[in-house]
Image (cartoon, rainbow, N blue to C red):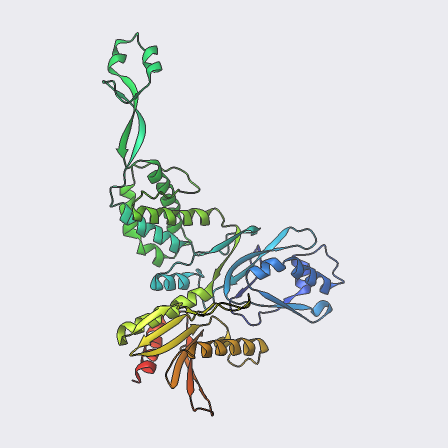
Length: 449
């Protein structure tokens, strides 16, 4: 492990590599009594339970004495949390959960590719109560937010975004807010009568809001052209950055931690300020625990793929469509509505699609009770959605992440009325190079070709 990293694994890991109690004692908790390794581990896990819960990480302890070890199961979140010593309460290292199936220096290039395709930004969520040991080894992918800021600023820079700014000047006429005291003090000087100090409201682009935007632009520019940003990302905005360098050359940067959004601003300016605040908020909390819900990324990917298919074969796609209950609830725990991820309506036929960012197709030969229970819930849920399909033989999709494009067909037929439901279990890799094959497979299923 690198300095400052306590442990790391990928999201959707059913069982991680083991972390031995004896190694924890040697490296991180030297002052605790090594005669009781089980107590060391139990205290460590208990003391950091809030952090583990924040990332949906579940520890599992096995063995005893010097062979005692702990495994971790991760779920939908990627991110970073701090680990503290149960003895002193001090930070000892960071616990990291990476995206799956990534390689190379940049762990987030794949994420950025996906976001750029689906056109939906999912900003990191920070926890201000949890400080990290370091922010060097594992940073959230802020450069996508930076690219979004550059794109918006590029459009705003073409607008006449000017404001009145009250500036001191000297004039030969008595106008504006004259500094009478200064004028009186220089009354002995005849030239002062032709050099009158005053303040005028001047319509200019060099106003405070633009100055704050210039400050954010400088942050973004520095980040995009640092060694941490992949060359592919940098090249996407190279021309726009060059244009903005010239456009903002004479605007003085004004440091800011937040930029107020004013209703009278252009809509593009409001959007720019909102994105600027995303950048400012991210930059100032980089050493805080953070997470991104990758299940939402997967959901957006599946929605994107089915929308692309609908463009080719026709039909309408509805995201997160709500099916409301028509009567009042008798109990507080009752559901008020059902919400499938996607409803696909084509030629008066309805298809329900649910995206499940779970490890089932990544552990095809596992006999885990956890996977069985989770799949049973997923299956019952998609069957509940399918009940709103009037077709005699219904067709629905359950989508899971996988290492390759996979398909499994589950046919359910009732012997009572001979009605059937076909559930297509579709494995979708989180990599854009596989999307054409996924779309082709869905097309063939829905059209029969």
